[in-house]
Length: 167
Image (cartoon, rainbow, N blue to C red; front, top):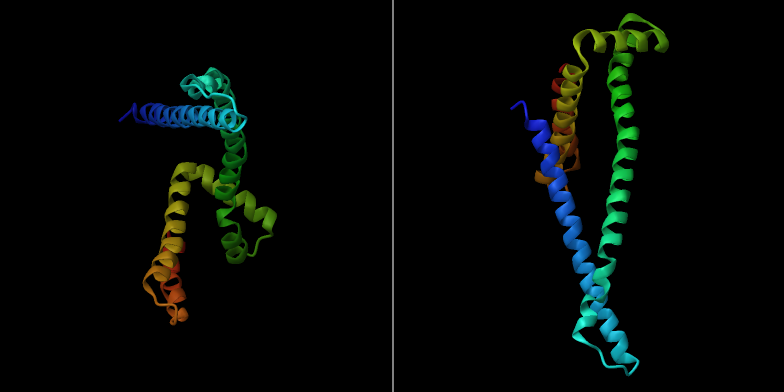
């Protein structure tokens, strides 16, 4: 269990690279087939070797694809992680502001202190669970309710929302 994060990351990288590599190889082979078709349309004699003519560009394609994947991943991490951190810090602002008649600034400070006092991951998991209950109940209601009964679509999420907020 203690190596689970490392194994998960390694598995995701292996799957991603193998999927990307397979896609690029197929793309190179299809490009070779198109080269053969274009030669035939121009009246030149296509060769079977033309199918593999674009494979020499495979390493360049793979390098560019991996670079773009790394840059997109880093960009998403730089955008998503601070957003999640801020969302968890702000999760109790409105409750504190309404309950204790605080300004939003004071409520944010108190909410941040509460998250730091009890641990970020506990709050994150609880908020994620609450979102899953609220969103999942809405999705389940949309799935099982006929299109004629639109009021029932909102009864299930509204009935389960206190449980989600209670978490």
